[in-house]
Amino acid sequence: MSANRKGDRRERELVNKLDEAGFAVMRAPASGSATDRELPDVLAGDGEQFYAIEAKSSAGDPIYLTGEEVEALIYFAQNFGASARIAVRFDREDWYFFHPDDCYVTDGGNYRVKKETALADGTDLDELVGHSTQARLDG
Image (cartoon, rainbow, N blue to C red; front, side, top):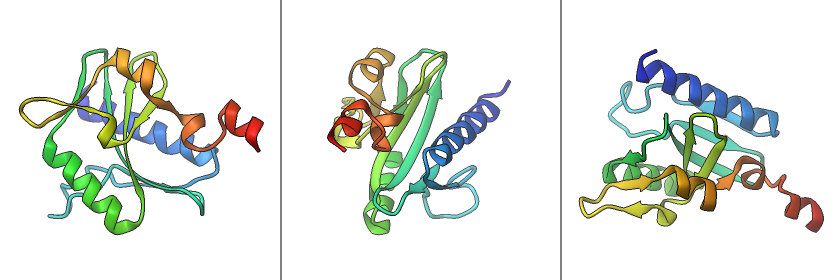
């Protein structure tokens, strides 16, 4: 399966999970290709929380995003009134979310998320949407 088809499938999976969590969700397929404007892969909101999400998946290698991708995500999110998030998914793992400031920046200005970092430090979907155990205890 081509990387693009796999990435598209992963983005649709993320959209479905956010929809199941009660969010209104829009996917911008092939973001950036239909317009000169850089668009996030996914927009999601539930009336209280709004996210502009750049989604990446990998079989197990670290996930890299260019500095330009992340800058465009932050720019769009700020202008839209959303929180910028980088969503990563490694094979046989769940989705994990990071604020761009929480990602490692390489000497070349690219952003990197390793699988170990995602599993140890990433925000899972339940926590992102406010369904975490702590949120249920607090609520």
